[in-house]
Amino acid sequence: MKTFYKSVTEALGDELTKALAIALCIILLFTGGYFTGSITSPKADEDTPVVNVPETSQTTTPSTAPTTAPTTAPTVAPSENGNEDATTAPSENKGAMTTAEIVKLYNDSANKVKTNATKVVKNYEDREFNTETLVVPGVLKGLVNTIVPKFMGDDTEPIEYVGTDAIKESFIVPGQDYVSALTEADVVEATCTDNGTEYEIMIKVKDETNPVPGKGVGAAFDVIETGDITSSEYASMLEKFDTNYFNCVLKCKIDKASGNMTWANYMTPLRMDIVANMMGTHNVSAEISFEKDYNIFY
Image (cartoon, rainbow, N blue to C red; front, side, top):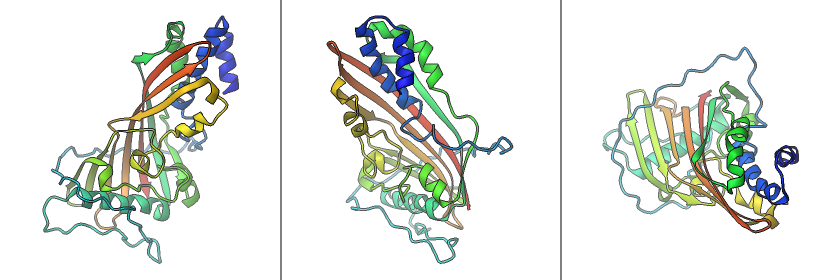
């Protein structure tokens, strides 16, 4: 951070400009993946083959309006040999699944990834920075096209996470024992398509401001914890630092025979709103999105 800040401020002029650059630095640190694990993730070996991403069905099944949300996510106990199906599939004769059933099916299969999977491959991570909606003091606008591309590169080469420890640390909701703690109340829309051998699930969660891990958006997506910033060395410079997550969608494929999730995709758009108090009050707003795509092996 200090090296990046120095390189930016040295390219600028007066003290006000240097102070305003801090807000942009904070944004670029996030978009570069410093707080989402992408910078510290080990790269795959050069001879690792690219994993083909399966096409996801767009068939939509109407979901039932949420009723009462469970207080905790379903707990999946792995079998003694770690390979048997621990996921409870919905009854075949019930027709369209309810939202509660889809959420449970997703939770069960997702949480098995951190106990049963032997390898997870992140096929890619795509990062988008919306320059059209960017709000920064005029003195910084000219820097955006120069600085953002340098710190907003995508991960286009597959990255392998092999073994339980690596998967726990790097797969969705890094460092936690779970992949999903979603409840029915967190969900705006949920669909499940039965294509014969697989369930194809789509879940869209409710928009949320400043989510935390384990709840709401943070129950199933990697999120930026605003507390990390408001309690940091930059706190005195910030009157406001909000993260607003919107249209967050996950998709996955679940093998019906084993209950294992074999592919997952997470789209996480957000807007950061910052009010910086540095030689005056200044507003900074930026929209970014992260798309992470995975194949899972057992």
